[in-house]
Length: 334
Image (cartoon, rainbow, N blue to C red; front, side):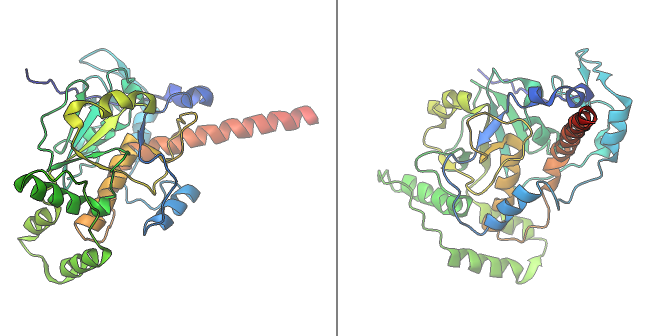
């Protein structure tokens, strides 16, 4: 039986911004990048900078169109009748903005998102990826999971045997070789050395890059990876999907050095548990540098187009509420 793809859109509204911020902090839909302590890597400076000024320095399209849409207020979706802001998360249709007014991003690999059926659609950030990279992103509602060629797919999820993005391609090659020569029973060995990455970078920067064959060159560096899978759910709901037999045997990748700046915190969980759109963005950023061996120049920053705008709106509302409380205290003191 063929699975029906469920394209789920995130919901937010001006009312959320105006509402008590405590309600925003109750349920966070996170992608657990790594439950362990942060490891030292070449991206540690990025992590420290993100903690100081999250989402600063991104190369983003103008948010003016979202500002105008917010001023107009919520609109009624003509398909389902729902009251929505910016887009309908039920029907996957924009509201108050057009496709020509938002960025469209081409990704170097296909992205599949497996969404837990009990997730609240309006609180998920996964839909940002579908809207902004429509030709490269699919969202499935569990138990719908495609049939994968396991040596051509990775699952971004922590756990025993999970590797870094840096080691990922070599491990996929190892899996391919293992299958072609018969099962060895041995785990994937992290053999991709930094010297090899440096050599690949030198090749990428050499004269001749930028030729008509450049896209084929990028595909060869990414080979055999064809698709990346993410799980979209709260941490307490991930076990059912991550342990599904259809995802067993797929190489797992974890993002160890990244920290979330999502405004909905999940109590008792570390800040390395990323919102789904953050996990997708950071994976692609690392993939661009370590696997495609290219300098990153903001190619995927617009994946955070909606996310960064909401982050600023919510934080502004929090600050205004904080200032209001402080003013009330000062008035009482007088």
